[in-house]
Picture: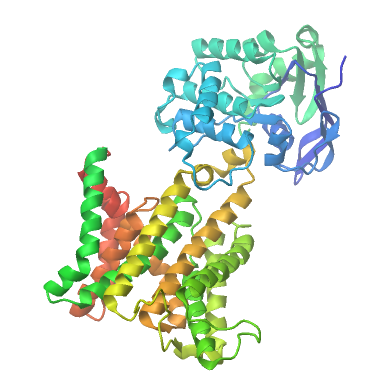
Amino acid sequence: MSEPILSVRGLVKSFGGLVATDHVDVDVYPGEIHALIGPNGAGKTTLIAQLCGELSHDAGTIALDGKTIDGVSVADRVHLGLARSFQITCLLPTYTVLENVALAVQIRQGHSFRFWKPVRSDTALLARAHAHLARVGLADRADALVANIAHGERKQLELAVALASEPRLLLLDEPMAGLGPVESAEMIEILAGLKSHASMLLVEHDMDAVFALADRISVLVYGRVIASGTPEEIRASEEVKAAYLGEGDELGAEDLVC
Amino acid sequence: MNKTVKIVLLVLLAAFLLALPYLAEYAGGRAFTSLATRALIYGIAAASLNLALGYGGMISFGHAAFFGIGGYVVGILAYHHGTGEAFLGFIPGSNQLLVTIPVAILVSGIFAAIIGALSLRTSGVQFIMITLAFAQMVFFLFVSLETYGGDDGLIIRRTNEFFGLNLRDRTTMYYLCLGMAALVLFAIWRIVRSRFGFALVGIRQSERRMAAIGLDTYRYKLVGFIISGIGAGIAGALMANFLRFASPDMLAWTKSGELMIMVILGGVGTLFGPFIGAAVFIFLESVLASWTPNWQFPLGIILLFVVLFTHGGVQGLIERLGGKRE
């Protein structure tokens, strides 16, 4: 197998007495979708926050393409090829759908210290943004204000904005959350189609989506990776059943904070 | 409002502003020209503050510092031009507007860079308080400079020279300020629509999102803050020429508050709003002050009304009346 694009070793993060990430090892290989599952409160979103640089970790290393990115800022990690989508959508409400994507394209193109030329008449920029919207099926909503679009559309837009950074590794934080069955099926199809463009670390609760998309799955419980393997291996693992699938409801009720 | 109506309104407004000194003289109220000049100068300062506050989401409570620094640059250069000795021993004084304005831009820009670089490490209420604290430091610095008048301020014996124009003439000064206001308005209009402005307004909406798509938000906020400070510095330089006086009063925290009130009155994050706000503020101040020495009280009530009911200041009100928004 080739070198992993993302390699996480011995990652630790604690908040006071709570160990949110407990010696986590995760590898994502080029071209694969690596799913990260686990009950609520397992530390999935905390892990994503450390990978994208919003939170600093206490110990361990994160390497992108074999080079460590510990201490690299969120913005610089994007330029190294790491982009994320947010679980609770984080978009610019007074901009249109197209503008949200265009801004990401603009930043991808280099610095934004250009003070004079109107950006909205830059047809090349807008055309690129349009192309990204088309990939997630939002082309016909380009001119709608983000404040006025539906939840499902926001989820799609999250993905389009992440794609506009042209990442080699996508961190997807629950892209299906809150979607209806039809929208979920659409999203699965979109993600499957993107596989050739970017590797993905997919955090998701929707098991149908996970088993439909993932090449490998890691199971996170109380901040620890208790199992990692192919979907078949995970499905067969007694440990996973006991720790997660079997007691899922009970765990979920305890830790709704995530 | 469609485009033609907008253009017609703009042309009418420009015609009115160009004719204003003559209209004022015809109506027998020459003081009105001075009032309009002050409104234009404050409009420049408020529009600059609005770039940081309205477009960039940086609620600076210290913009009087840059306004006052612009004023003191003119005052100090004029002082050294008068005495003939150089500032700090090597910077000669000047009474040329083409020198003093660029120096005011440079100095207020440097101050904005220092204050911004430190203040922008914080956000929210802390940012408001820290910008206020820095402005107070600048205020007390100038109060303590006895050479430049200290508490009493610095009288500028002669206004700056500018292409042989007599800037003591109220009408000439009015046109100079009108021209500068138009320039500043045009610059802000271009900046807001540029790639930089696109990113800056994005930062106001969600800094987290902007970082997640690869923007080093701190640098962009800092540059926005510096441009904003420079604009206030230009306004201060004009004000010192207009009043022929630079005083700590220009640096007082109440001045920062007044600039904020102008922005809010006119419309936060709108292009013309701060100019409208400044005009309304100056007009109300002079009208209310002729009725009562406690003119701030009725002004406060009006401000309350504007904040509660207009949804976006006077500019928002105009746009709604024009049917632009529901």
